[in-house]
Length: 350
Image (cartoon, rainbow, N blue to C red):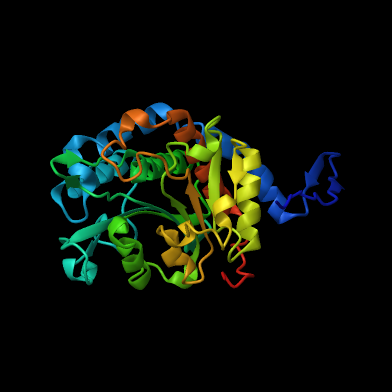
């Protein structure tokens, strides 16, 4: 694993005519890093296990009927998400008429797939203060697999955990904005539909983007961050990182730096191996951004016995782990939104 060290350049000391001293850091990048490290901690700590739990017990409740694509339960969950954004004073994106990106049922149809109804991506937006035209996307799918044989498949981890993480990350950025510390780049919070049936919602967005893909600097995708897998029986103080180095060395470095500056989880790159038979890199919504040459990172806790089972319930979520992984996601986003330069694409992605 690569190790990152920050090299601080020599400062210039200027004496004014009154004898006052001012020390100016001649590295813009490092100046931004110093500023954001101090202030990001304050807003990161607004992300709490209590808030995440409150949201998840609603999003993954029986009332939402398993959030199957295009069905009333999913639409009800979507209305709850929108209500939370409105309560936080966060609006829909510029150029949109509301919080919905409608997707017709015909878009979901493919051979041998179940018939799905009309559905929607849901988006919220915080405009950047200095580079508003550059867009950071933070994504999670809010659909699950619905009901089977009368049982509700609540999908608390998959992907209720990522869904509520987006709410808390957005709220933290909004608190920063209220204090005059809003992100320099714009952030699109994108709850995508149809992931369980073929990554449909993220594919639709990248084929019909609200903002030019050329202006999209990164996708941070959060899919299953509330549990642990069998490879980590002894601890939940870890997260799998997938894809961060596939297109951009800068993105890999940013993720590593953000972790060291925040929750210091064990970053597990096992599933980042291109030869891994699980092929998780191709199985969640970041992939539709990555295949369009947009640097992308996928945060993931691995699968467990309740994956795609009716037993994936909010009561089984490890909320301390959910909090730490959400805080890491926020810190990655904070650094990307505030750095002087966007991540450079210096790799092929293959």
